[in-house]
Length: 299
Image (cartoon, rainbow, N blue to C red; front, side, top):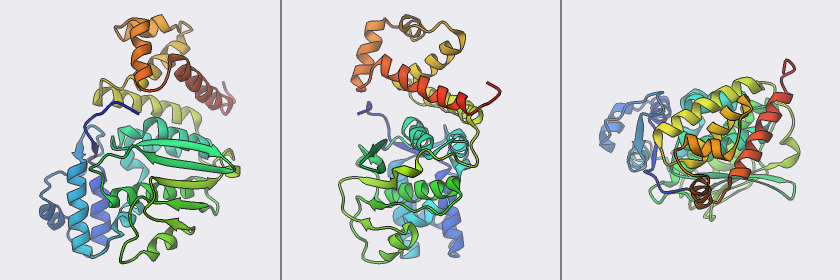
């Protein structure tokens, strides 16, 4: 589990609310005022709103629309550009496996309220939203799952639906059918975690919009933002220094520790607190970079 940090979300989230409300003929400003929120949408990932504010905004939106499934409407209107560099990196992913791994590594730049994990077992590729913060409302979780499915469909550019979806929210009293209508798969409510299952056979098929060099470029931008947001984000700081030193040919644990102004032992202890090691981060970073390089013929 990652260290506890303040739970916030990119202010660009507000754009999706505004779009979903306007489509129903509702003035977004009136809903923002009802929620007591003065935040405005922004594409700057350092402009944040708290999860408590997001929860109030969803409550006000559900009141205004009389739709307990309003999270689906918000997720449907999230654009890759709303996620800043992460969104552009996702668009450039080489495969859905690459997409899933990018979500797990970097989604904290969008929201610090959950950790995403990826499981590939038994023919099912499962994306899990785990360790969800206590302030995260059910509508936010609906929006996450909807956005992920929407992005997968857009990237794959062929007919693709999940095998199944599990949601932590209870079954809503109204508009429950909207979930199966949109996801086009069995949907289970009141589950322990929010999960999306795809057929593992689709994971490694090349995506039509793949651009490995662009994906890696945006990954580095995301890591820079993560460092600014949370100086205690030890894993991404180490990953960034590994990428820099791999390119120079001078990579050592001592060198990375020196850049972070700590001893190698202290570095290892901090990584252990996040349930990882320097070698694990090095191996996963090398694998990710190598996979990207193999897709670039000029390299």
